[in-house]
Structure formats: structure tokens, C-alpha cells
Length: 332
Image (cartoon, rainbow, N blue to C red):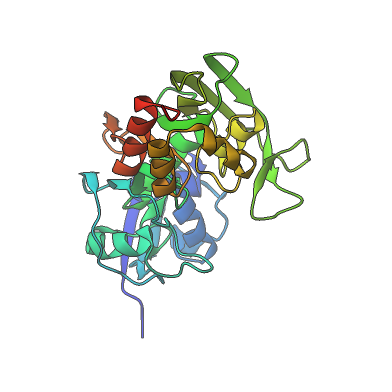
């Protein structure tokens, strides 16, 4: 049974690489996708099949590419409630609740954000890399709440991926988190620059490392508020200059100020909860996760170039803990 396909035809306007010429002629399909199609023998130049993406074309050359219709993603669609902040034909911005896994994986094959998006977006997913699936360009930990953008098509996926790869250094991307940490940083504003790699003692954890495989990681923080008399907790705004797994959690623990509720990187601070008021202790227990929320997400729309910026208020569990900490940090 043949796979439905569409045939794209054009003529080269400049002398250039074949993959680049096709990406310029058909901007809704990513260059990476064209590279794969070329390798699969789906592209002809002047009627002859070409399998090298770097093949040089001449102005006026006839280019023909057969693009199979996107296949369905392997994860199954699952209908579930989503807090949709923004949606258009290219992308969708979700306010993710704590407890929701973003992508299927070992132990989480179902019930993920990807399963929900496949069900919600349906045919509006036009195919990323030839598969009808949502394009995940960044992730949030299961127990981190907040804003997350997902691409619906190749063009949006490519454009957003470029921005996330630049990590905001070109001014297009903004990511800001709210974090409650133990203690008070020595400086109100600061930067943590420490490379991160998998922990050598526990492969489920990340760690600051000087190893050959460690990747650059930079986190900027600003202490918005100190809580308690004397202060025992700080409310921080953290901005990412890079996007490594567990970056904020690892960096804050590295400088001696792990996140409240972080059982992985802040287990040594469990006894610090005794310094809190009974109300705050109960709120922390109810939080039952790291006190981290992706509050601000800004980026340039990959199709229109329009700057988009979204804000998410702290969810109820985080807000309740913050309120309890503000009321009093110790029993009267």
C-alpha cells in the first residue's frame, strides 16, 4: 500500500546547495527534513535522482521533491484538560501543571503532555520530520509548573529551536522562573556559571562538573524577597542563559541554596523545615515538589517575527506556601 504524498516542483534561482535551495523555495518544510528526503532518493535535479544534500544546483535547474504525507505519531492521543495560554496554526503555549510529564518515556508511556497535544491538535499537526507530532523544543521537569511552547509544524519547530539554541543571547528569547530557596544568597543579584553533566554517582541526577562531557550552564538570579526573622528562605527570579537538565535546581544547590521541596538536590536541608512556622511547614508538605515555576516566556513568532510574551501567576500550591512564609516564618 503506497503512502500518500505531495510533489513539490520549482526552479533554482541561485547557484547553491540542493538542500538550501529547496528550503528557500519551500519555507514551510525544514532544511533538515529536505536533507532526509534527499538521502532517501525523493529529490530529482533535471530529472535525475540526487542523494547528496551538498549537490550544487545552477540557476534555472528543475527541482522536484516527493514529500510523503506525515505519518501518525507513535504516542496515542489522549484527551485531557489543558490550560492553553495561546494557540495559532504554528504553535501552542501551555501553562503546564506540576505532576504532568512532557514527553513519553520509560515508565511514562501514557498520560503525558505529548499524548494530550496529539489529541487536542489533531490534523493541525502538519508533520515534523515527517511525523504528525508536536514539536517539543524545550521541557519542564515533571514537578515544575509553568509556561511551555510547542511547535505544530516543521517551520515553527525550526524557528523556535534556533531561538532556544541561542538561549536568549540574541534578545529573542526570555525565560524567567520563580524559585523559593533555603537561605539568603550572599549577593542580591548574581550569576552561577558552572558546567553540568550526569552525576557519576547517580545517573538519575545531574551535577556541576569539570569533565570533558560537561556542558556550559549559566543561570542569573535576583533575590526578590527574603522571608523570616531572621531570614531563612528567599524568593528568587531565575533567568536561564542556557537550558540544561535540572539547571536551576543544580545551580542553586551548588551555591548552597537548594529549592524548597527538592528531594533530589536539597535532601540535606529537610531539617530546615523545622525553622518554619507550623502553617508554612504544612504548606511545604502540601507542595510536595520543588518550589519552581516557569513564570515568564517570551519569544519571536517563527512565522511572523512578532514578539510574543506570556506570564503565568504562581499556581495555588506555590502561592499558598509563599503566603504562609510571608505571614510568619516561626511559631509565635
